[in-house]
Length: 316
Image 1: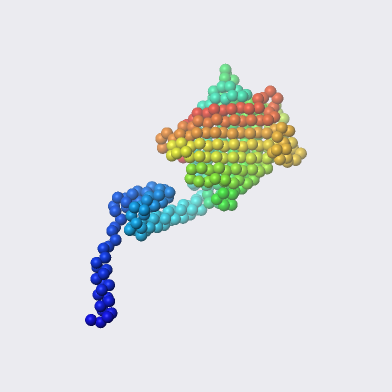
Image 2: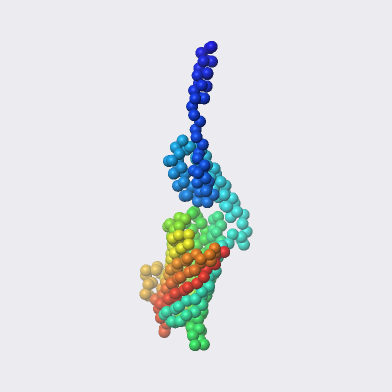
């Protein structure tokens, strides 16, 4: 027998004598498949890490399962991006409707009805927000609160954190002393924190405000607007949110910064804290507390109003 043939025979015998690598145990494979089916990447990575530690001889097979999951996730993300790019204006909207009651303090101290709607269209490079709210109450045959607000806010995204915003807002609150108030603003916003469970965003820019008072007179002013939006998903069934903002107005002669005009003319501040608890499917219960403050309201009006709301919210 030649030397080459002898070497080949020895290697062949050695390979036959070496035991084959054991297949990944079925319980471990089932555990990974379950995590993959959930679509949660964090769960998949956690299970894969444990599986590799407890089955070091099957790392290659586990890596193949992980690679297949990553490939499918990439395809889904690509399909979602393509869907956003091709969607028409009336497609891919989400939102929520709210209906409940409230208790007010300040210019009125009564119980009333409250309703609101919020709509969001999130595209690839831009986002459109719309929200409206109405609060109404009567006491002894008289209307003691008739408050209405509506806001539309388009956003243009420079990247996943920085965006430009435009804002047009209408408000009516005769008990605060004005039959109509219009605010137009534009500026920049930035998402300081953006994770699956927490979002913190701020925005700021110049604004124009036109106020028509209940007495019939009106005034225009240049202003500055700043806003804060905080959302925290505490669990799958519990969410906390905090929305706060202020509009600092100067007289019509020129723009003045927020710090310079506080106390000189009028500052509007509004903050809402809310806690949502999921009930069934798309239905949630919401408890919220709103503070509205005007540093220089019309004569005879209180500076601060509060609203404590209890409502049902439907997501769609």
